[in-house]
Image (cartoon, rainbow, N blue to C red; front, top):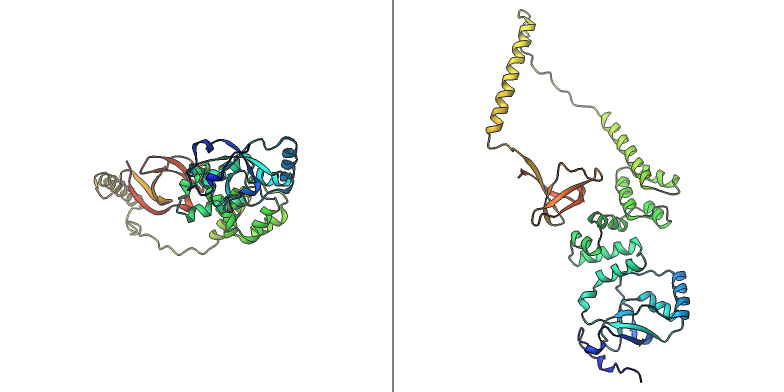
Length: 331
């Protein structure tokens, strides 16, 4: 005799009879629906057919996870691929587990579970990050929830605003990661023609090639700056230019005066309360106050290590994302 689940039809969300929680049930596929807002939006047809073949032979090996029944339907928390493959395999039912505490299975849980089973496309992760930002989550929180470094959040977001040539190279598979897209986009904003020429002549793009391009563009920019006309700087007055004076004695006297002045200034500086003894840089990152670790070498010149003032946590962040710079007296 089948298990009667009709009692769950109108059960309030999260309220499920104890004997239905964490128990494997055979649910009809017509009683189950996917979550329209789940992170994974693209499914590989070949992978689904391969999974369907396995299900025909061995059945679904791991139950899907669903929310409590509402309006006659169970909504999937985890298991959309198994659900779709079961339909392809011609199955009528699917093993499922009802989870009462749905707060433990939010969309962060969905994306982490998807990553563990089959990697999500970088663009899917990018859209998810934008969604969580819209919900008010900071980049730091998003990174912690997704178990990624904070810089990776910024890298993925670059996919949503990348220039068309870069995005096309990414879609063609010549660029394989969000970090590469991010760095190319930064270079594109400096020298779009150089990046377009690079993309047109590079079938497979590596991180090393992007670094070499960055060095070339930086050198070109530096050369351009050097060729600019520099403002005229007036000659400084020279002590004892009187032709009747002894030039050697004048130079010696001038040197002595400068030396005494330097010593005097140094002594004054050490006693001057208006000067910093240990200058430090404070800034704002992700709506939080941080202190730059000026003596710690970052992984790239575009990054820096910071310490959060409120809890002392440390992490490497992108310099371009820091704002509200302030020079302060360090500890």
